Amino acid sequence: MLLAISDKLSEENLKDLKFLCSEDIGKKKLEKINKGIDLFECLIEKAEIGPDNTERLRYLLNQIEQQVLLEIIDEYERGVTASTAGALDAKER
Image (cartoon, rainbow, N blue to C red; front, side, top):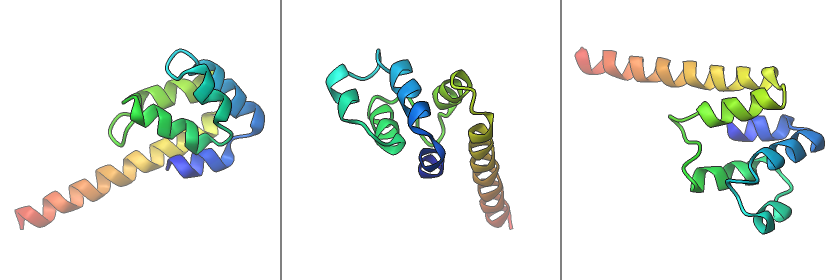
């Protein structure tokens, strides 16, 4: 999911995201980031985002007005819920 979002970020989107994350990630580290996935990895290291914690990522994408990218998160979460529900059904059987 994060790679799909990263691939769809424009250079300007990444610049805006880096600005929004400047308090969470040091300036030196931000200067070295040139891909969205690198930024997301830093946020994962800081426990800002994770597989079951997408609120911060949703907030950031809302701030840069990228509702299309929010749909990728929605699809991911529906897939996780569906696969979890399927696993539970298998155990019940």
